[in-house]
Length: 202
Ligand SMILES: CC(C)(COP(=O)(O)OP(=O)(O)OC[C@H]1O[C@@H](n2cnc3c(N)ncnc32)[C@H](O)[C@@H]1OP(=O)(O)O)[C@@H](O)C(=O)NCCC(=O)NCCS
Image (cartoon, rainbow, N blue to C red; front, side, top):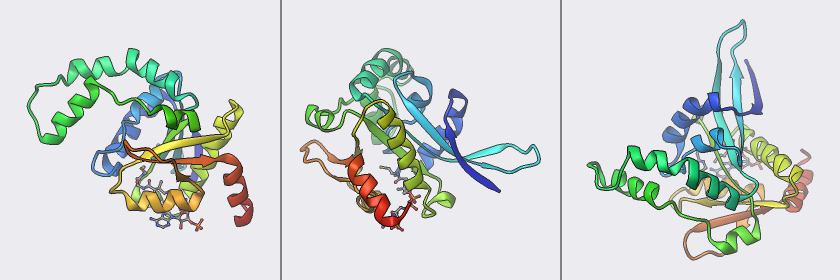
């Protein structure tokens, strides 16, 4: 079976949403779908081709935006209003459902200091069968290549403080903490990524 990375499209959105919900640390990971549907974003998927005309299957993705503020503006106009209509604040559900409806109503904006450090951001998620095989690193290299093409020199991301696996992975790749009181935030300088990769010989 052939595993490869290709650019994501809107048609990948349903498969990617399932991965996001099943792997995103108990649904706490940000939604992936807008990154596959809006224009200020980028997205790549890891797919496995089962061959002989069989359907391809998506095993993971990386997505983000070169310009986080532009993404927040576009999502504010074209993405969050639809979710607000569908899941209004005041509906029934678990504590987590209520929290999510509130987040749709008032999406959190990235702190200025974080955007100032690195305007680009990204999210990465792989199904368990694709983890610990080097694909996370390869997807980050792909995102870095994309962001660099648009003049970016690095990327930021936020992690759920309970997700120690992700923390270990990001540190290994070369991410360092961006001090930020509102959450756990990391930044990756692409020069540093290049140095780490050359030490590893990749
Ligand atoms: C976190 C995640 C993206 C990492 O991708 P991956 O493909 O499993 O990681 P890789 O195989 O590319 O590992 C790259 C390096 O990180 C290290 N690493 C990965 N996960 C690690 C962990 N949990 N603890 C310690 N080191 C880890 C690997 O050993 C490897 O180091 P090496 O190159 O020196 O051997 C992936 O496991 C995943 O999607 N997990 C579930 C969802 C998630 O938590 N996403 C992040 C949300 S913020």
